[in-house]
Image 1 (cartoon, rainbow, N blue to C red):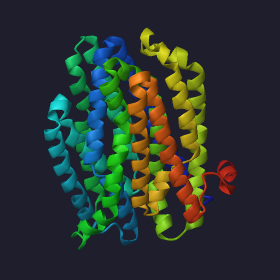
Image 2 (tube, rainbow, N blue to C red):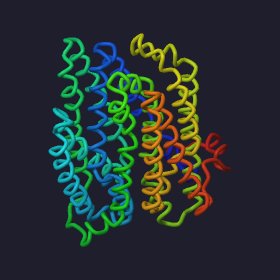
Image 3 (spheres, helix red, strand yellow):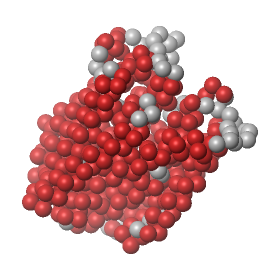
Length: 419
């Protein structure tokens, strides 16, 4: 069907991203269930803490170069993407250097997961570059389906033989084919030709403030598990991971829609098309709420039963699930505020917002975890999420008059959005 409105293609691309996110979330949920039922809480908590640390370090090491590539490549569309090879090289070299150095420095804490850090970081950057060309399929297939499915299969093998030492290698190995396949796909998309003069400077002038923000975001996403493990012990970390596993549904749904939307938002805001940016933002927010609120409401209602899937000892974590559900409903109602803010070029404001959120979370964690364990970590995380969403929401409204809901909300349901 022909596109009938400026947001054409968002529905199809967004649903593809969300479908991949849903598959990945299901695989991760099953992986946690397998680990918690096959191994003791101490072994499970140690594994979850190690993987959270590995993802946190990789998230810092990638320097948010992926979003920088989406921005630079999307803006190169009018010239037929000429010179984009220079942007890709400018992004990969610093990331590889930082990732290898971080893996070496943190090897005593990462153990067998240390070699996975550069692989995870570079694979993520390469996948992001494909999205700059408007291609969502590599991300959906490789990151949304291939990695989670292989991780689940290999972890099931480790569980079947009762070998906790196999868990970390089983979890890390699938990132290697992702890196190889993402590189092959990107090589096919980048047009031949010389690098543009000043590609390094152009990329990192935009990305440098966002690199710090990306590092803070990576810490924010995984800090709670690491801190609760350090302050409350591996058993509390296992309980917290199990009870908050459903938060990945909201994170991945938001990520799936953002991956479909980010390049279009960059082009709309760069061209000064504020009306189109407003329609894209409000349409995406509506679909985010429609797709995730039933999950949060259902999880809040069924938490006592669902948590027992991880084992009888995890049924008491229901209060954590209730905090999670309420927080994620508020966050999704704000829409993809940080994506819109950075697409408009306000990377420094995004960094300051994230620093405020992490500071709030860490302060409350230090106060609440010693006395309340996993529930204290959930409350600290919740406060950080509220800060992380309400600050950019206010900034977007003040600077551009953008709101997550408005006159485009109802028309998004009434008109087709697929091409």
